[in-house]
Image (cartoon, rainbow, N blue to C red; front, top):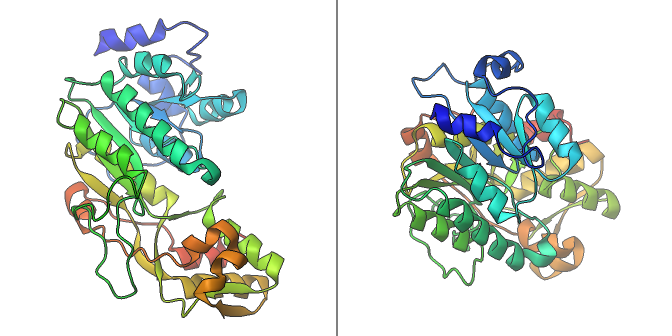
Amino acid sequence: MAASRSALCLLSTRLLHPARPLARPALLSACPLLPTDPPLAHSTMLVFVTGASGFVGTAVTEELLANGHQVLGLARSPQSAQKLRDLGAQVVEGSMTDHELVKETVKKVDGVIHLAFNHDFSRYVDSCVEDGELIRAIGSAMIGTDKPLVVASSTTAPSAIRKPGDAPFKENDPYPLSADSRPRMHSELSTFQLAKQGVQAMVVRLAPTVHGEGDHAFVPMFISKAREASFSAFVADGTNVWSAVHRDDAAAVFRLALEKGTAGSAYHAVGEQGVPFKDIAGAIGKKLNVPVKSIPVEEAGRHFGFLGHFASLDNPTSCEKTKAELGWVPRQVKLLEDLESGSYF
């Protein structure tokens, strides 16, 4: 392993710009964070992280460093590269579309966490296809190594459309729909195929609401819509629920899966099984001091635009297997608490 890490330092300076030598003591001394769990009896790893400078990726990078690992982050811009260096990570400058760069980097690390995904919903299907291609490229450099590969997915990717009161979606539930109807399922299927080829490949499904400081996804979008409309809306009776997780708790799931996850497994980064959307709308209305109103299902698209689907989404999700197998314990504030006292307003 030492030889492979030495080889990493010999990557051309065009591709690899380490902030400091790869010696672990330098990285650890640069990281002021305390571990989120007691020290574990695991080997420290050099971990390649795609999407390392993103909202979840930053938390994962910090979580890995705080628990004794080294991080090699993929950065496509100078700003992202500097952000990672400031955290104490090493940097590979390039794009996730550069599969040759990715494969050469993967060969020289101990494990991979794949978080990068293009969240442009206007080209969602294309993004899913590109994600599957990248996963297969990463995996091709890991076949037969038994190294860990942890791939980010979503609890909404494989789960069936649920109605309020239906049983929560579990980690081991069979796929209820075809991959053609849920494009991101292809990423999961590609990952599970690699688990049959000598890769310790597994999936971590994120809740649709990953909250915390710096969130720029669904919750801020619904807040903006409420400001624009001068009222905060929910669909029908608002009893549909969203699973939710704080980004720091989600980061711990990725780290624990890397350290002790089982090949071919799915894990759920879900701190709350289901938060009624009516309660989310109510918290937004309270903070903005605007009315909270129900709108009919048929008006959801007109009012929310592309968010209409998500406003009526019912996604109760269990994480019992994840807790039992990984020893994961969510510790951060819950979604409604974060809306009340966090950085959203």
